[in-house]
Length: 94
Image 1 (cartoon, rainbow, N blue to C red):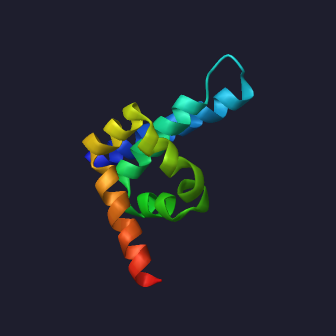
Image 2 (cartoon, rainbow, N blue to C red):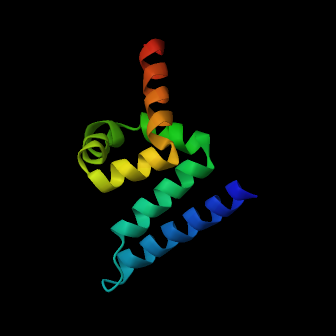
């Protein structure tokens, strides 16, 4: 039930972000970030997909580790540990 609620909330945030792209009054970035975090909490597959993407490896990883607010969110939700585990497994595979 919790995962379903997280998934629904994540999808709604992504939709709000898409609406924000069309309407300049609504900010889209906070909705996309919130939606991504919620979807990562809801689905391990989505979390591993994000961690293995080249955009995350090049840009978002440095930004999240440098931003105190985002790093606290990732620590509190357990996403930081899961992303590190995915990266270690990826290194073992290569």
